[in-house]
Length: 440
Image 1 (cartoon, one colour):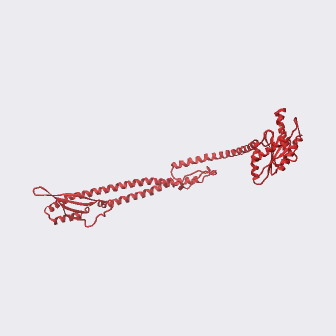
Image 2 (cartoon, one colour):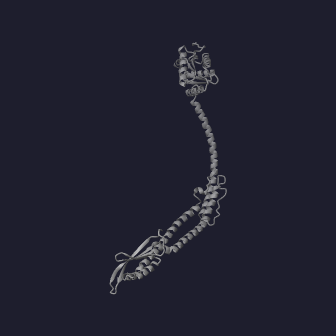
Image 3 (tube, rainbow, N blue to C red):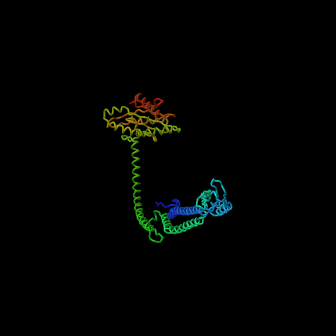
């Protein structure tokens, strides 16, 4: 019996080294993505805060000038200041309103600095109050001015930094992948592949004949595994040899036991079909023969049955006792067996009745067999009881007959033989045979 050998590693989802690398770099990739995402988000938020600080600082830088220009309604100065503001990289537009909310002037950036519609392109505005301070240091609100900007500008400012972060993460991942692949393949993949090939070549013939020697350097757990495997293979080799010898003994014992069981089974089958007193077939054996005969007749074959009954047998039991009655039954069985035709089946139907099954025989021929048996009984002197006679009923199986119908007709024929004086043969539906005799 061969040992089960490992299949292609693909059956188990790939080699252990590859699966180990997948797990390691799956975890590392997840951590790298998370850390890189946090770095990118941190850089973006820092740039956004700087953008908001730059916009907020414009209030201190340009607010007083815009208030004075609006107070004196000097549109030239106002336009010049707004033009300067809109040139700043963080500004996408600016406008000035008077104290009633009317737009005095508004200017957009000369060209779109950030294409709107992206995830980070979120416009935002900051409103500042314009207050003119006169010579007496009294404040006079003159309106408001609004600066428009976009979060995408912050992203543009840190784009280079973000690219560096991404490239750095990719390079580190690739480098670590190559390093881990080389190390894991050398220390785990190759030894495991060698173990797999060794195990795949094992069977019951070569188990324990050669040891497993790893070519991997070092002394680690896989070497201990190889040593334990070699020790186990040696023990298994010895166990296989012992089992082979034991199996041979068991096979021989089983063959002997099976032969005895078969012999005993045949004996029991014979016993189940044999009458214990006379040694003839019993009622069960005759029933099965009748069932087979019905099927054979449907195929066109003929079949007849003879039923015999010992005349005045009860008086023998009453006069001489049952032991003598049993001896008479045995002697009658021997006489009837000796007069039975070749190919017929004689059995004890029950009590003092015997039945002869005659395959391939019509009613006339069966009647002749019955007459020969009747004469044999009549002409033989038995110990103690002297001569005895038998009455016989004969019936041929007709097309469409069942077993019960055949038995009913042969019983009726036997009844007529008894009624007409015993010691005679009566054929069903054919009347008494030509050789019918009365008792001597």
